[in-house]
Image (cartoon, rainbow, N blue to C red; front, side, top):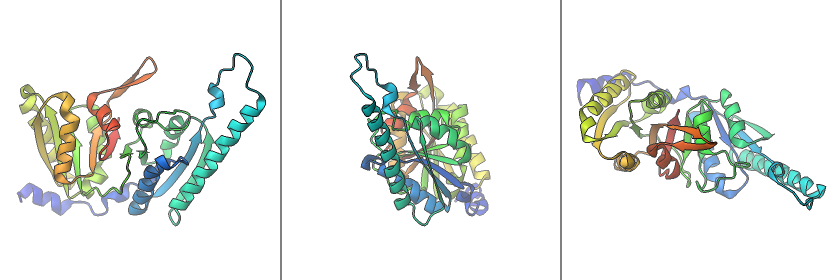
Length: 291
């Protein structure tokens, strides 16, 4: 162990995760979204944190076009009744899973991602994912990509199969950008609590020396905060970066990747960089995104 590593271990904050006091999760009634809820409840229990469950859904009647006048008022009433039933079932699932914890339940008729973004003002961490990534019903689902870019809080993406976040080893996906700096700052409680942290940059050969300098500086600063970190630079194509990060995580036994969320809107559609897109679409691990 080097002197710097020994120093990091000595000043490592106790109870670092106590900095996260409030969690926010979107709750849906169907079985497909239960891994997200289970992961959020487990994390709230681990952190002894307040957990807010949000039931949010928009009636599909708002988007129904009826040029021939075939849809009567009964159809609208049935859709409204279905929405209320979904919200009640979501609340039942939330209260059953979170019994005994410090919780709050809210239910609104609104687009889920927009409602989550508004309520994120009262949360330290937003829980997303934990459901099949191919399901894209904006009326009922809080799209993870939209949350990352809009809520102004770190977003913890749960793998589709769920799981309990251990956070004993963490991989930081480094890129010398604002988003990556924000992600490291937001993830600091998790990094301080981890037993091993690898700051990894994937770059071309021409950028290898610069990447070594970038990651070394990040590691040095993390150690000042008591983080047991080391640097790793991998030469590879940008399109392979997500695979390289996943490989490092598998090798460490890490279940958490920290990354900047890179994206913007174009003609009303979310457009993302390769690493962000791949980690959103193929989340084998928990991913903590910041934008």
